[in-house]
Image (cartoon, rainbow, N blue to C red):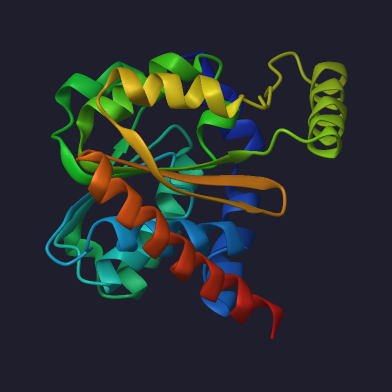
Amino acid sequence: MTCNACCATYARVFGKNVARFEAWRYRHFGPARATRTLLALIQAAHSAKDAEVLDIGAGIGAAHLELLKAGARCATDVDASSAYLEAARAEAERLGLGSRVTYHYADFTRVADAIAPADIVVLDRTICCYPDMPALLGAAARTARHVLGLVWPRETWWVRAAVRAFNMFERLTSSCPLMVYVHPVAAVDAVADQHGLRCCASRDVGFWHVRVYARGSAQRQHAEVVEGDVHAGSVEKRDRH
């Protein structure tokens, strides 16, 4: 285990009860809407077939489990919540995918140099809960061979209001509060750009920005934007029915 003070906070907020509920919801309803959109955009940008996946802050593992079911060869799950890791491992075993996933209980920024690069790197609702976004995103971007997928809170007044209320509650009720951050898209783009990644697809889904970055020529990126939007649009259309 390589962890720090953040892990104690995550253990409190993302404990066994939360992990059990999210695992139950995944078993009965599949991935959350924003995660489904992210997966569609990722697979439009880079085929999951035979890919290596790195899922940072994976929660109960929905993103990497779905990519494994879509043909990915293997996945690495790095999480600072031991309850989430336990739930993710149980879900992988339930689906017969346990032998294809490696688990690390850690703050990713502390172990990034020891984690092998992956074709697809996922941070689904992860950078919003980490106090140093450039450090976390930069470490993730360095490990992404082809595609980096992100979900984080949108820059809207009502999202910011909800985040402020949550943060105030945390400060009032905990000596080690979990702070949530609404990062500007431009700031996230800038970190990705520093590591040779360009946005190739973007959707807003309810509370969340869903954004995928890829390595490659501008021409390829433009084609991926069009294809990604088509896939994401079909996901949203299914959601409405």
